[in-house]
Length: 448
Image (tube, rainbow, N blue to C red; front, side, top):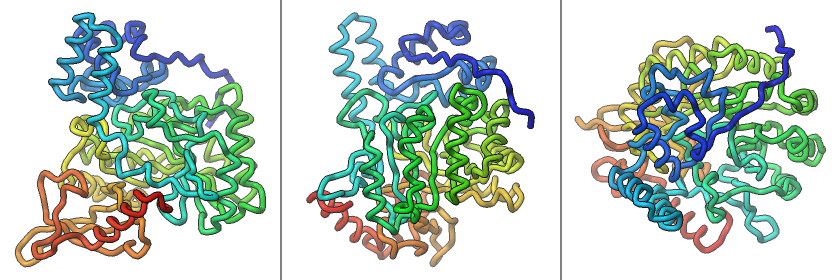
């Protein structure tokens, strides 16, 4: 593919204070603008003009999936909460009263799904902020400079990172501390840089975090993963930004040193990869020897059909991207707007996976990233005349749980692991006693 020679266009970013400057939105009904503005006071909102101009079909607003993916919708809040917010704004109650109401609404949205705040490990007896070590082989790092995105997704389970509440912030600018921790943990083979989006950082900042992996002391870290939405929200990052040559040279050095660099692309809809610049970005990364893996949740209003996922995976394979995960929407934020029952998620997955070639069957799911681990809904089966879900751990806090199949009573309405019930005659699932012990230990300040 021919490389773009022109520099990236300037990025214009719009927050809820600048909604009135989005010409495409202003053309729609004032009620739409008002509802978006109200919800954007509770949930983080930011969108750039690349998304506005190239990804959203404004003739299909408000039903367009990319519009719903980036612009908060009225139905994302409880109707009574939305009415209270509207009354507070219209009555001129003042910023302090509005902020108090906003905070109350946020508190009901579970800012710590899957108890992720308990995954922070210890180094020399001190809890490492900005680091998570839930599974033995993989460490997550949240670099402070990467705790924002080129645009925000309305479903994001890490929304508390972006609302300005320091008590909910989980990040670190101490790369040396991360590297010391990894040097003491030879069982770690994979490090995932996540956020936010690490690729909002400059190449110079990324170099501080990534270059130390060339040190022999970290030779056991063989895979560096970068979780990002930049591929579709700002693909110029890999093609024509001012410091793109430095970024690509850094990634090339890591690949040439023998590290496996995996770009974990968050792809929710096939249209995200439909632009020429996005496809050029994919090719540029692949030319460096970087493997792109695609993951994303199944979301009501966005991609809740087998046809959408089929096309999503087919387009990924066509571009040389590896389909990786179909997730279940986490139990946080505006989950009622996006979540679908596990039974329907399984039906969508099966319908899509049956319709694609073997190269797309690498996609696993539907998968719940719950407190005890990643639980896959593998299928259903009849036992003694009763229908059950067949489940298994594909990652687990206790490695002894891995791969062990277990049953849950079939439900047409359950959307998450804690809404499932064990088979008749079982008091609880096999992992629950061990998970309780973990929670008790974590509450006492022990190693997570």
